[in-house]
Length: 358
Image 1 (cartoon, rainbow, N blue to C red):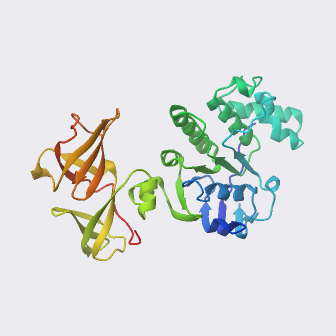
Image 2 (cartoon, rainbow, N blue to C red):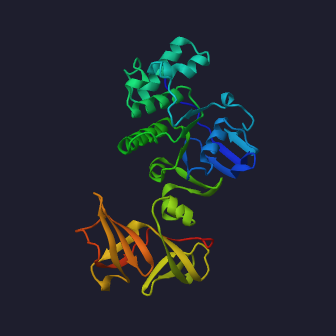
Image 3 (tube, one colour):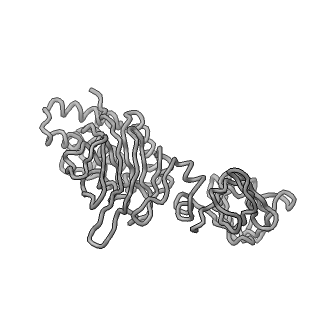
């Protein structure tokens, strides 16, 4: 017996959710292709968890339609949607053994005991917990408890699997390992998965696509590399990793690209993103700032305000004519001390023209 649900696409068509005067989700439209993992990313209160609950059937939309597998499920209860959800708190029954926890959903669905046991054991095998069935949740680590919660969801063979902040209760090292396990399992089983987090590194690591939410609406969506390297506005640039937002001037446009001047001496060729000539703002990733050994190699100067060694790289805060700039130097030879003068250049990758509204 192999656990494998029939993956189904999820589509939102102008979906809104109001709680009295409070708008939690405002005319949101998106599609999750069957077999993809899409992350809803954003700060607390942006609407991402409400969106997840609208997929699960734990909330009903005030307006608009929710489709799963091409069927309008907007008014169907959670029990009729063939969707499983893994909660932030794991929601394991402390008085039940691991195998009983994994079997619970199957048991209440009236499935025969022999099949229930087989599917529960297969679920534990999938998450690497064979032999743990007779333990209580209290006898497991946090990461193991999370895997039990995943197994409990998988054995129901859902068409869509939902994760609500699944790693927030784990320490940093364990989060990395468990997110890799979740991604590998999702890809192996071909599950349609919607994943909620406020952690941008987590979202970048696990997703086929990311939907960034702000104030109950979608700010931007796309592949992880697309959002990181081409944020649309300051909010997305700041939320998907660190970004220095600096003033610049668009000098001229040629085809899809523009010549953009930064400071007095630096000119960059960047996609113009329909921005007209004149003052513009750039998002500059910390790793896109290059520190040079002499003025001849660079166009800007700065003074080191702070330098911090963090193992794999050195972080600097620089005082420049563009304002304070944060730098992540992954190719350092020696730590540059505070008070030192430095010369600055930019990589083309990691520098993006922001839209005019910012």
